[in-house]
Amino acid sequence: MSEYWYNVNTHEVEEDRQSDWSQLIGPYKTREEAEHAMEKVRARNEQWDKQDED
Image 1: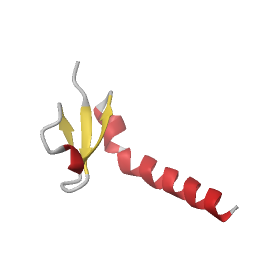
Image 2: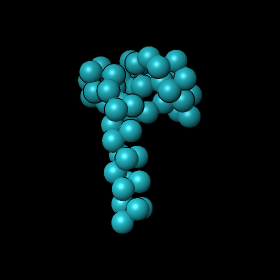
Image 3: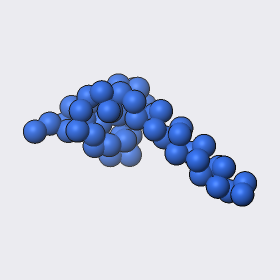
Image 4: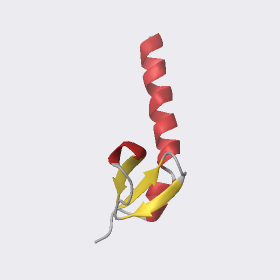
């Protein structure tokens, strides 16, 4: 079974990790999940920022 990773430098999805771990977010089970990795990161960051304000 393949795993998918989002590369923060190239902004591309990699199948079965091809780059150094420091450039990747994942793993994800599907290509679609990996394509939306940055949306999840932004949402988490916003949530943490809101918690910090409270």
